[in-house]
Length: 242
Image: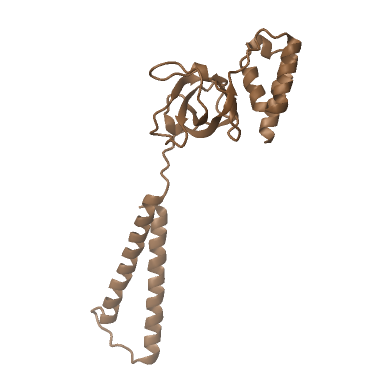
């Protein structure tokens, strides 16, 4: 039996015993001493059912509460912070890139679901899925049973990022939306370093999430350019400050 139930039973028993002693003390003052006998007195016999009834009531009350307590499954949960898209502002891109930071072990991979807005985390039919991935994750790298994702229509959605191969309970769903005037992500592959810096600075001024998603489209060698690396750092810092 759990310790808190035993503690409750002890408290009820102690209270009942104290009440019984008080009644017996009062009886000794106002009545003649009882004749000693080897058999249990009627008063003692009548008090025992009250004690047991109190104990039974305490057990029943505790058992009623127990099913309402949250169950601790011990299952791990992804420790991620979604940086983009912005949950509070609709995405300016129909093909967003999901960027997150993690406190999980280095090299941890994730399973990611795109769910309908307001859908149940565990039972809703996913729109798109990606397995064993890391950040950043382009929408176009996700797929469903029919085809790969290309774009999301205007409206609300949820992104669920979970530890890989554990299931949907290993994460927390976060809302996001796509704006009515959303466009495809810009193609910055052919921009010169100067043009790239100017475009990213302009995006950063409007939306650090948009700038971060645009930077995530670049190949690694362009992201490592000093001016681009500084802009990415600035975008991440502004998002964290919100």
